[in-house]
Length: 370
Image 1 (cartoon, rainbow, N blue to C red):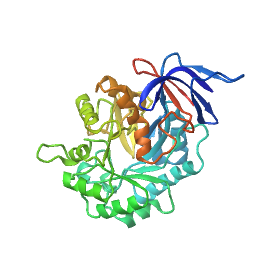
Image 2 (image 1 turned 30 degrees about the horizontal axis):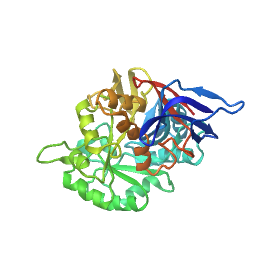
Image 3 (image 1 turned 135 degrees about the horizontal axis):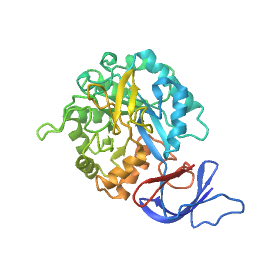
Image 4 (image 1 turned 180 degrees about the horizontal axis):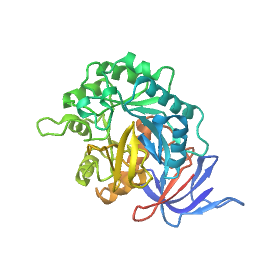
Protein backbone atom coordinates (compact mmCIF):
# COMPACT_ATOMS: atom_id res chain seq x y z
CA UNK A 1 0.00 0.00 0.00
CA UNK A 2 1.31 3.43 -0.97
CA UNK A 3 -0.23 6.55 0.56
CA UNK A 4 0.44 9.56 -1.67
CA UNK A 5 -0.18 13.30 -1.71
CA UNK A 6 -0.70 13.69 2.03
CA UNK A 7 0.74 16.09 4.60
CA UNK A 8 2.49 13.63 6.91
CA UNK A 9 3.39 14.40 10.52
CA UNK A 10 7.07 13.51 10.69
CA UNK A 11 9.67 14.71 13.17
CA UNK A 12 7.27 17.14 14.82
CA UNK A 13 6.20 18.90 11.63
CA UNK A 14 3.90 18.43 8.65
CA UNK A 15 5.69 17.64 5.40
CA UNK A 16 4.47 16.57 1.99
CA UNK A 17 5.58 12.94 1.88
CA UNK A 18 4.42 9.56 0.63
CA UNK A 19 4.33 6.54 2.92
CA UNK A 20 4.69 2.90 1.86
CA UNK A 21 3.31 0.13 4.08
CA UNK A 22 4.42 -3.48 3.68
CA UNK A 23 3.56 -6.46 5.88
CA UNK A 24 1.95 -4.26 8.51
CA UNK A 25 4.95 -1.94 8.86
CA UNK A 26 6.05 1.34 7.38
CA UNK A 27 8.67 0.46 4.78
CA UNK A 28 9.55 3.82 3.22
CA UNK A 29 8.83 7.51 3.66
CA UNK A 30 9.58 10.18 1.07
CA UNK A 31 8.83 11.02 -2.54
CA UNK A 32 7.86 7.57 -3.77
CA UNK A 33 6.69 6.15 -7.09
CA UNK A 34 4.05 3.43 -7.18
CA UNK A 35 5.27 -0.04 -8.07
CA UNK A 36 3.57 -2.16 -10.67
CA UNK A 37 0.38 -3.60 -9.22
CA UNK A 38 0.76 -1.73 -5.91
CA UNK A 39 -2.39 -0.42 -4.22
CA UNK A 40 -2.32 3.38 -3.99
CA UNK A 41 -4.34 5.55 -1.59
CA UNK A 42 -4.55 9.17 -2.67
CA UNK A 43 -4.64 11.25 0.52
CA UNK A 44 -5.57 14.33 -1.50
CA UNK A 45 -3.80 16.77 0.79
CA UNK A 46 -5.23 15.34 4.02
CA UNK A 47 -3.17 15.27 7.17
CA UNK A 48 -1.50 11.87 7.63
CA UNK A 49 -0.82 11.03 11.28
CA UNK A 50 0.71 8.05 13.07
CA UNK A 51 -1.83 5.63 14.52
CA UNK A 52 -3.03 6.69 17.95
CA UNK A 53 -1.96 5.02 21.21
CA UNK A 54 -4.56 4.87 24.02
CA UNK A 55 -3.02 3.99 27.40
CA UNK A 56 -6.28 4.24 29.37
CA UNK A 57 -9.42 2.66 27.92
CA UNK A 58 -11.93 0.35 29.58
CA UNK A 59 -14.28 -0.50 26.76
CA UNK A 60 -15.51 0.33 23.27
CA UNK A 61 -18.49 -0.45 21.06
CA UNK A 62 -20.28 -2.65 23.58
CA UNK A 63 -17.14 -4.63 24.48
CA UNK A 64 -15.51 -4.30 27.92
CA UNK A 65 -12.11 -5.73 28.83
CA UNK A 66 -13.43 -6.87 32.22
CA UNK A 67 -15.50 -9.48 30.37
CA UNK A 68 -12.52 -11.35 29.01
CA UNK A 69 -10.66 -12.31 25.87
CA UNK A 70 -13.51 -12.16 23.36
CA UNK A 71 -14.37 -8.58 24.34
CA UNK A 72 -10.72 -7.50 24.22
CA UNK A 73 -10.53 -8.88 20.67
CA UNK A 74 -13.67 -6.98 19.72
CA UNK A 75 -12.10 -3.82 21.13
CA UNK A 76 -8.98 -4.49 19.07
CA UNK A 77 -10.98 -4.82 15.86
CA UNK A 78 -13.19 -1.81 16.49
CA UNK A 79 -10.54 0.58 17.77
CA UNK A 80 -8.34 0.06 14.72
CA UNK A 81 -11.14 1.44 12.58
CA UNK A 82 -11.08 4.64 14.67
CA UNK A 83 -7.35 5.14 14.10
CA UNK A 84 -5.99 3.48 17.25
CA UNK A 85 -2.85 1.50 16.45
CA UNK A 86 -2.29 0.23 20.00
CA UNK A 87 -4.02 0.38 23.37
CA UNK A 88 -3.77 -0.66 27.00
CA UNK A 89 -7.06 -2.26 28.17
CA UNK A 90 -7.86 -0.86 31.60
CA UNK A 91 -9.45 -2.85 34.40
CA UNK A 92 -11.60 -1.36 37.15
CA UNK A 93 -12.59 -2.30 40.69
CA UNK A 94 -13.65 -5.93 41.10
CA UNK A 95 -12.99 -8.85 43.42
CA UNK A 96 -9.53 -10.44 43.09
CA UNK A 97 -10.75 -13.46 41.11
CA UNK A 98 -12.68 -11.25 38.69
CA UNK A 99 -9.63 -9.06 38.18
CA UNK A 100 -7.48 -12.12 37.57
CA UNK A 101 -9.88 -13.44 34.96
CA UNK A 102 -9.88 -10.06 33.19
CA UNK A 103 -6.08 -10.05 33.18
CA UNK A 104 -6.07 -13.57 31.77
CA UNK A 105 -8.23 -12.39 28.89
CA UNK A 106 -5.88 -9.49 28.18
CA UNK A 107 -2.87 -11.79 28.48
CA UNK A 108 -4.33 -14.16 25.88
CA UNK A 109 -4.61 -11.34 23.34
CA UNK A 110 -1.10 -10.11 24.13
CA UNK A 111 0.19 -13.63 23.55
CA UNK A 112 -1.93 -14.25 20.44
CA UNK A 113 -2.65 -10.86 18.88
CA UNK A 114 -5.88 -10.22 17.05
CA UNK A 115 -5.21 -10.40 13.29
CA UNK A 116 -5.64 -6.98 11.66
CA UNK A 117 -6.57 -5.33 14.98
CA UNK A 118 -5.08 -2.63 17.18
CA UNK A 119 -2.19 -4.05 19.19
CA UNK A 120 -2.77 -4.79 22.88
CA UNK A 121 0.24 -3.44 24.77
CA UNK A 122 -0.68 -4.97 28.13
CA UNK A 123 -3.06 -4.18 30.97
CA UNK A 124 -3.63 -1.00 32.95
CA UNK A 125 -5.01 -1.77 36.43
CA UNK A 126 -7.08 1.16 37.69
CA UNK A 127 -7.94 -0.51 41.00
CA UNK A 128 -8.21 -1.68 43.71
CA UNK A 129 -5.64 0.48 45.57
CA UNK A 130 -7.71 3.66 45.51
CA UNK A 131 -9.07 6.11 48.09
CA UNK A 132 -12.75 5.47 48.70
CA UNK A 133 -13.38 9.21 49.14
CA UNK A 134 -12.47 9.73 45.47
CA UNK A 135 -13.69 6.41 44.10
CA UNK A 136 -15.71 8.03 41.31
CA UNK A 137 -17.42 5.22 39.39
CA UNK A 138 -15.26 2.53 41.03
CA UNK A 139 -16.91 0.03 43.39
CA UNK A 140 -16.04 1.06 46.93
CA UNK A 141 -16.50 -2.41 48.41
CA UNK A 142 -13.71 -3.78 46.22
CA UNK A 143 -11.09 -1.21 47.20
CA UNK A 144 -8.23 -2.05 49.55
CA UNK A 145 -4.90 -0.81 50.85
CA UNK A 146 -1.94 -1.44 48.51
CA UNK A 147 0.47 -4.27 49.16
CA UNK A 148 2.61 -6.62 47.12
CA UNK A 149 0.69 -9.72 48.31
CA UNK A 150 -2.65 -8.13 47.33
CA UNK A 151 -1.24 -7.27 43.90
CA UNK A 152 0.17 -10.75 43.39
CA UNK A 153 -3.14 -12.34 44.42
CA UNK A 154 -4.78 -10.68 41.42
CA UNK A 155 -1.96 -10.99 38.89
CA UNK A 156 -0.60 -14.49 39.64
CA UNK A 157 1.20 -15.82 36.55
CA UNK A 158 0.08 -12.99 34.25
CA UNK A 159 2.92 -10.92 32.84
CA UNK A 160 0.77 -8.44 30.91
CA UNK A 161 0.41 -5.71 33.55
CA UNK A 162 1.98 -2.56 32.10
CA UNK A 163 0.40 0.17 34.23
CA UNK A 164 -1.14 0.60 37.67
CA UNK A 165 -3.19 3.53 39.00
CA UNK A 166 -3.25 3.92 42.79
CA UNK A 167 -3.63 6.48 45.57
CA UNK A 168 -0.06 7.28 46.68
CA UNK A 169 -1.07 8.51 50.14
CA UNK A 170 -2.42 5.11 51.25
CA UNK A 171 -0.37 2.99 53.67
CA UNK A 172 1.86 0.65 51.68
CA UNK A 173 1.64 2.65 48.45
CA UNK A 174 5.27 3.79 48.32
CA UNK A 175 6.51 0.23 48.88
CA UNK A 176 4.25 -1.06 46.11
CA UNK A 177 5.35 1.73 43.75
CA UNK A 178 8.97 0.73 44.28
CA UNK A 179 8.10 -2.93 43.65
CA UNK A 180 6.11 -2.19 40.50
CA UNK A 181 8.77 0.15 39.14
CA UNK A 182 11.43 -2.51 39.66
CA UNK A 183 9.24 -4.92 37.68
CA UNK A 184 8.73 -2.52 34.77
CA UNK A 185 5.17 -1.43 35.62
CA UNK A 186 4.32 2.25 35.08
CA UNK A 187 2.64 3.67 38.18
CA UNK A 188 0.09 6.50 38.12
CA UNK A 189 -1.74 8.51 40.79
CA UNK A 190 -5.51 9.11 40.86
CA UNK A 191 -8.67 8.35 42.85
CA UNK A 192 -6.58 9.95 45.52
CA UNK A 193 -6.75 12.43 48.42
CA UNK A 194 -2.98 12.98 48.23
CA UNK A 195 -1.34 16.26 49.02
CA UNK A 196 1.38 17.53 46.71
CA UNK A 197 4.12 16.20 48.98
CA UNK A 198 2.68 12.69 48.72
CA UNK A 199 2.83 12.88 44.93
CA UNK A 200 6.40 14.17 44.87
CA UNK A 201 7.46 11.44 47.33
CA UNK A 202 5.77 8.86 45.11
CA UNK A 203 7.68 10.24 42.12
CA UNK A 204 10.89 9.77 44.13
CA UNK A 205 9.88 6.10 44.42
CA UNK A 206 9.13 5.78 40.69
CA UNK A 207 5.60 7.06 40.06
CA UNK A 208 5.56 8.71 36.63
CA UNK A 209 1.98 9.59 35.63
CA UNK A 210 -1.25 11.19 36.85
CA UNK A 211 -4.40 9.42 35.66
CA UNK A 212 -7.23 11.61 34.24
CA UNK A 213 -5.82 14.88 35.55
CA UNK A 214 -8.16 16.87 37.86
CA UNK A 215 -10.76 14.08 37.92
CA UNK A 216 -11.19 11.84 40.99
CA UNK A 217 -8.38 13.48 42.94
CA UNK A 218 -7.69 16.20 45.48
CA UNK A 219 -8.27 19.62 43.91
CA UNK A 220 -5.80 22.31 42.94
CA UNK A 221 -5.65 25.11 45.51
CA UNK A 222 -3.14 27.93 45.66
CA UNK A 223 -1.94 26.88 49.13
CA UNK A 224 -2.41 23.12 48.65
CA UNK A 225 -1.71 22.08 45.05
CA UNK A 226 -2.98 18.53 45.56
CA UNK A 227 -2.57 15.82 42.95
CA UNK A 228 -3.07 18.01 39.86
CA UNK A 229 -0.79 20.79 41.05
CA UNK A 230 2.01 18.36 41.80
CA UNK A 231 1.53 16.63 38.48
CA UNK A 232 1.66 19.87 36.54
CA UNK A 233 4.73 21.13 38.41
CA UNK A 234 6.83 17.95 38.57
CA UNK A 235 8.81 17.42 35.37
CA UNK A 236 9.12 13.70 36.13
CA UNK A 237 5.36 13.22 35.81
CA UNK A 238 3.28 12.84 32.66
CA UNK A 239 -0.39 13.78 32.96
CA UNK A 240 -3.24 11.89 31.26
CA UNK A 241 -6.10 14.09 30.09
CA UNK A 242 -9.67 13.33 28.93
CA UNK A 243 -10.19 16.01 26.28
CA UNK A 244 -13.90 15.52 25.67
CA UNK A 245 -14.98 18.99 26.78
CA UNK A 246 -17.00 17.37 29.57
CA UNK A 247 -14.43 16.20 32.10
CA UNK A 248 -12.36 19.37 31.76
CA UNK A 249 -13.14 22.92 30.67
CA UNK A 250 -11.27 24.00 27.51
CA UNK A 251 -9.29 26.54 29.55
CA UNK A 252 -8.06 23.73 31.81
CA UNK A 253 -7.11 21.65 28.78
CA UNK A 254 -5.10 24.58 27.48
CA UNK A 255 -3.58 25.31 30.89
CA UNK A 256 -2.42 21.70 31.26
CA UNK A 257 -1.00 21.62 27.74
CA UNK A 258 0.89 24.87 28.29
CA UNK A 259 2.33 23.52 31.55
CA UNK A 260 3.38 20.11 30.27
CA UNK A 261 3.96 20.48 26.54
CA UNK A 262 3.76 17.77 23.92
CA UNK A 263 6.03 15.36 25.83
CA UNK A 264 4.40 15.76 29.24
CA UNK A 265 0.73 15.19 28.45
CA UNK A 266 -1.07 12.17 27.00
CA UNK A 267 -4.58 12.21 25.58
CA UNK A 268 -6.63 9.25 26.80
CA UNK A 269 -10.18 8.15 26.09
CA UNK A 270 -11.01 6.51 29.45
CA UNK A 271 -13.94 5.22 27.40
CA UNK A 272 -16.63 2.80 28.54
CA UNK A 273 -18.72 0.49 26.38
CA UNK A 274 -20.94 3.26 24.95
CA UNK A 275 -18.01 4.72 22.98
CA UNK A 276 -18.95 4.49 19.32
CA UNK A 277 -22.62 3.82 20.19
CA UNK A 278 -25.73 6.03 20.60
CA UNK A 279 -26.94 7.60 23.83
CA UNK A 280 -28.75 5.19 26.15
CA UNK A 281 -28.27 2.94 29.17
CA UNK A 282 -25.08 0.89 29.45
CA UNK A 283 -23.01 -0.98 32.04
CA UNK A 284 -19.73 -0.29 33.81
CA UNK A 285 -18.52 -2.76 36.40
CA UNK A 286 -22.05 -3.96 37.05
CA UNK A 287 -23.37 -0.43 37.49
CA UNK A 288 -25.96 1.19 35.24
CA UNK A 289 -24.51 4.09 33.26
CA UNK A 290 -26.72 6.61 31.49
CA UNK A 291 -25.31 8.32 28.41
CA UNK A 292 -26.89 11.59 27.32
CA UNK A 293 -25.35 13.95 24.78
CA UNK A 294 -22.20 11.83 24.93
CA UNK A 295 -21.71 12.23 28.71
CA UNK A 296 -21.66 8.95 30.68
CA UNK A 297 -22.91 9.16 34.26
CA UNK A 298 -24.09 6.92 37.07
CA UNK A 299 -27.61 7.49 38.42
CA UNK A 300 -25.98 9.66 41.11
CA UNK A 301 -24.65 12.00 38.43
CA UNK A 302 -21.01 10.92 38.87
CA UNK A 303 -19.10 10.78 35.59
CA UNK A 304 -18.45 7.14 34.63
CA UNK A 305 -15.67 7.19 32.10
CA UNK A 306 -16.30 8.72 28.70
CA UNK A 307 -17.56 7.97 25.20
CA UNK A 308 -14.58 9.76 23.66
CA UNK A 309 -12.56 8.57 20.67
CA UNK A 310 -8.95 9.71 20.36
CA UNK A 311 -9.42 11.45 17.02
CA UNK A 312 -12.12 13.54 18.75
CA UNK A 313 -9.68 14.33 21.58
CA UNK A 314 -7.13 15.56 19.05
CA UNK A 315 -9.71 17.77 17.37
CA UNK A 316 -10.90 19.15 20.72
CA UNK A 317 -7.38 20.09 21.79
CA UNK A 318 -6.91 22.00 18.55
CA UNK A 319 -10.35 23.59 18.20
CA UNK A 320 -11.48 23.99 21.84
CA UNK A 321 -8.19 24.44 23.69
CA UNK A 322 -6.63 26.32 20.74
CA UNK A 323 -3.34 24.42 20.90
CA UNK A 324 -1.11 24.09 17.83
CA UNK A 325 -1.52 20.76 15.99
CA UNK A 326 2.24 20.20 16.21
CA UNK A 327 1.90 20.22 20.02
CA UNK A 328 -1.25 18.10 20.11
CA UNK A 329 -0.42 15.22 17.74
CA UNK A 330 2.40 13.77 19.91
CA UNK A 331 0.00 13.73 22.88
CA UNK A 332 -2.03 11.01 21.14
CA UNK A 333 0.85 9.20 19.45
CA UNK A 334 4.53 9.27 20.42
CA UNK A 335 4.14 10.56 23.99
CA UNK A 336 1.78 7.82 25.27
CA UNK A 337 3.74 5.21 23.30
CA UNK A 338 7.03 6.29 24.82
CA UNK A 339 5.52 6.47 28.31
CA UNK A 340 4.88 2.72 28.32
CA UNK A 341 7.94 1.73 26.28
CA UNK A 342 5.93 0.79 23.18
CA UNK A 343 8.62 0.86 20.53
CA UNK A 344 7.46 1.03 16.94
CA UNK A 345 4.33 3.06 17.68
CA UNK A 346 3.46 6.75 17.54
CA UNK A 347 5.71 7.83 14.67
CA UNK A 348 5.80 7.75 10.90
CA UNK A 349 9.18 6.17 10.23
CA UNK A 350 10.60 3.03 8.69
CA UNK A 351 9.84 -0.05 10.78
CA UNK A 352 6.98 1.53 12.73
CA UNK A 353 3.46 0.13 12.85
CA UNK A 354 1.71 0.50 9.51
CA UNK A 355 -1.36 2.33 10.83
CA UNK A 356 -1.99 5.84 9.54
CA UNK A 357 -4.80 8.23 10.46
CA UNK A 358 -6.24 10.66 7.91
CA UNK A 359 -7.77 13.94 9.10
CA UNK A 360 -9.08 16.86 7.07
CA UNK A 361 -8.16 20.54 7.37
CA UNK A 362 -10.90 21.08 9.98
CA UNK A 363 -9.49 18.15 12.00
CA UNK A 364 -12.35 15.78 11.29
CA UNK A 365 -11.52 12.07 11.08
CA UNK A 366 -11.27 11.08 7.41
CA UNK A 367 -10.26 7.43 7.62
CA UNK A 368 -7.53 5.00 8.56
CA UNK A 369 -4.94 3.15 6.51
CA UNK A 370 -3.89 -0.18 8.00
